[in-house]
Structure formats: C-alpha cells, structure tokens
Image (cartoon, rainbow, N blue to C red; front, side, top):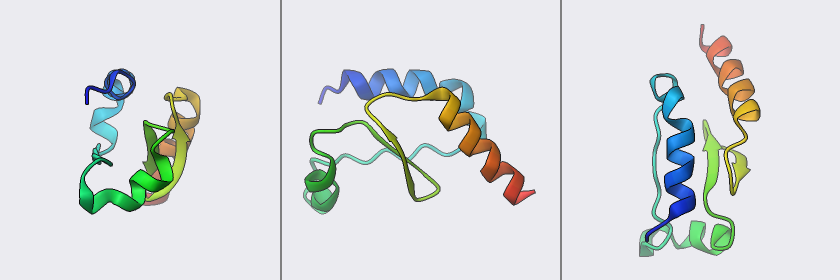
Length: 75
C-alpha cells in the first residue's frame, strides 16, 4: 500500500465490472502468505475463475477473450 499498478488495473477493468466479480486479495496479510511467496514481485496478478490469467498489467484482449469463453460456457 499504496499500489499504483493495482489502482491502474482496477481502472482498466472498470468497463467490465458488470461481467465479473472482482475479488481483491491483499498478499501482505498473514493469511495470504502463500500468495505473497508466489507473487511478491509480480503484482498485480490476475486470476479468472480460479486460473492464472496474467500479471503486471491488464491485457484487455486476453481478458476479453477469456471472459467471453466463460460467458459462453455458462449460457
């Protein structure tokens, strides 16, 4: 904290907010030490539907493609 990269990512994802639920995880909390050990140098990290998607910056094309696939599966 603060996390300018996280703030930027949330801004980029804002137009998609009606299509997914954003769950933020603070990796500095003791209960998230596994995530801290794995990603301490790579924030922000993005998982979609429990699977790793990308890190550092939002790749909107990749995000849109994966989100669309999930939406098709749930229809």
